[in-house]
Length: 435
Image 1: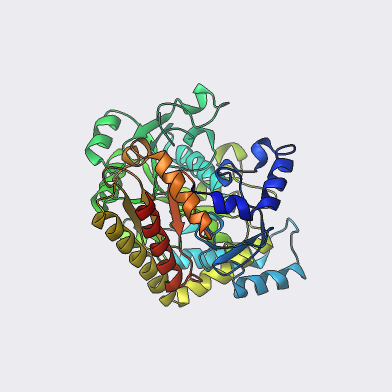
Image 2: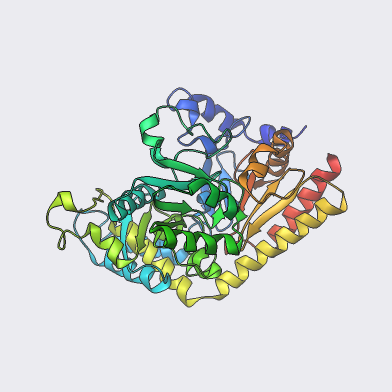
């Protein structure tokens, strides 16, 4: 039975999970970290490996929810953090590293002229929406089916089926009344829905994340850019996942489409610390400027106790400046991604198995669906959940951990080796043979 070996090897994790349920709702701090029958508890990590408290090693494709582009405990970042700990971990004042990181992001991302930092991608998305409304003087926001932009109320809709329902209890109708749900990779459908509406902005992931690593069609993003220009609306790219991962300039560099605002997270903090940010056109971002708009009622607000703290910004600057210098990193991780996608799809096709691989660069996902998904409806509504969970458990049995149990998302880091991909291919082939 799939998962038996995992259960036999993880008695301490099972015990700790039983204890955790007494103190944490559901025993976890984030629902996607739970998987059946219980999650393992990590004790250490290095490179592409994590170890649980029972001493078992796993090849990690979860990679800190995608934040760890270079793998666990990447030496240059860790050394920079250690040095900063001896100086100023946190003070609440301005410091040089926020300026250095801001300059670095602006240097790497063509569309960003000014930037502000937050503590998470959720915060960055929230503030970008507020800023778009402030700049345009309009209320309506377009967001896409299957798009995940964090826990902000106004965007926590149409994350998973049924799309007309909020993604959480406790979200009021008032918080969602100005959110317009749009179909992903369907420009004609977008035009039909927004005809006659006054939108402040459209927010989109260039590669649908939680919906299954589904890349946008190039013409789709270009069409959104043209549409926003026609409507005097802002185009916002959520690059929390793709920012600095697909290229030094993110997905927007690959697609050749410039958004008005970009939302960042994950890799922005060097992969090791909570981080977020949003930046874009100078005339839009200047609405946050207290020097230009001295009356607080005439500017947009953003702030936070730990926003742009010295540890996060130094870690982010250390990694981003290295990524800009070393293009071979992207050639390497994107090559591993291409190898994995092609090999896994070949296995499924040769056996006539209803499974499909999507993704781009160092991202890929496995879908147990009858056709290859081009949007989240196919990925989320037509998936075989039992098959997906069996595959997840089979990977765990063989020392491989991926995100998440109902739809496998793989993040490749520079610490992964070609042999790791070979092992994944062999284990997947074994799974299909057993099925």
